Length: 256
Image (cartoon, rainbow, N blue to C red; front, side):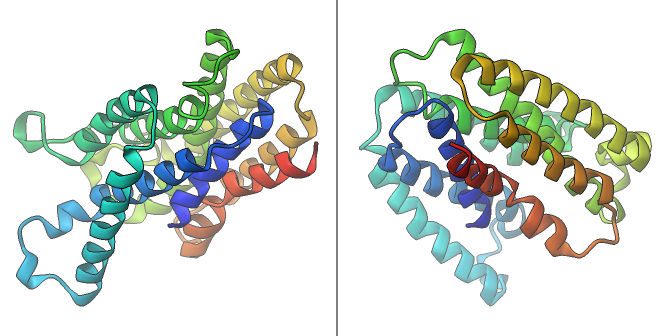
């Protein structure tokens, strides 16, 4: 639910930056979709067909996910055709991220270094495209620039998670810290932040939102990248780092 709130918060940034009235039926759809997709990716591989041997906690998660999915089915009928089409396209990436479709029973998650690029693609697609896809007056070039802006932001945001999981990931997973080391991963994060802030300032000149907003969220994200390590508390990433889109939303709300 924390991740789903963060996804909705980044969608709200899109609404604020383009000075659009939020669609709460779309935000509800995105919230329920995020929970469904996240739980499917995280727990489908654990549960599989072993329903009788699941722990009580996993059974509760299954029941919760089932009711969330029912809600998702309902709100899906309230969405436009364009929203459903984009959502199904992004849903395919989510499905293949967890389900083996490649030789030797591999899924997209198991391909070396591809994991964070797939996650960033889905996040950016949801938060940049869905709020704007059925809004007239938004140019294709500006939509593409916003998608790229979010893609770079999420890619950088995922690096502290890669560093955190270094001690637990299997050797063959091929994460950035495994392949290039923690120092080079943080350097890559710095390059992403430079690209993010440059692109954001270009977009800000076109649609007029605050450059201070971009500077603050860049500083926060940079701090999480610099101070990330495999020995940090789980709340450092699983709560505070994941909350950065929520902080960005607050900056967008206050700096208007």
